[in-house]
Image 1: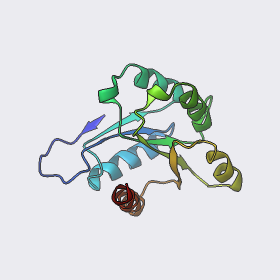
Image 2: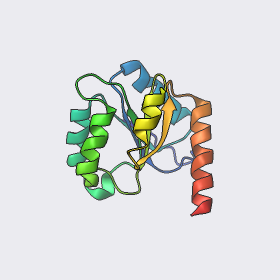
Image 3: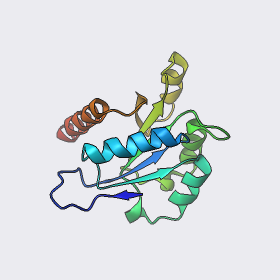
Image 4: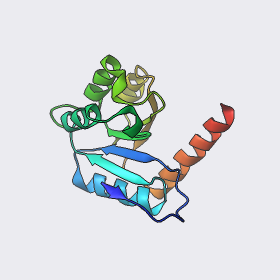
Length: 146
């Protein structure tokens, strides 16, 4: 976990959970989240099993506010996590914003992801500053419409 404690950083004051089996993609994500001041802290997990165990041990107050979930992972993939989440919705706070990451967005993934209403959006990796800026614009737009 990377903690950003400088009080003058204009972050969205949130904890991000990044789940990705690729160490390079995790490092890119952490770096982008910190450099763009997207979050106060970034927690990473490298598998679905470790993610479920990690989330199960947290109290509701400690759950992440935003989650980025890699779709394509070995053994258990992002869809497996989404299925687990449907059966165990308390793994994430109901207000947690969930983004799914993939290397290439196929028509099948676009269609299949619609069956998971908790997913805000399907995003193409790698994580970039422009992608984070777009997410922030979307979050601001959605909060204004609430």
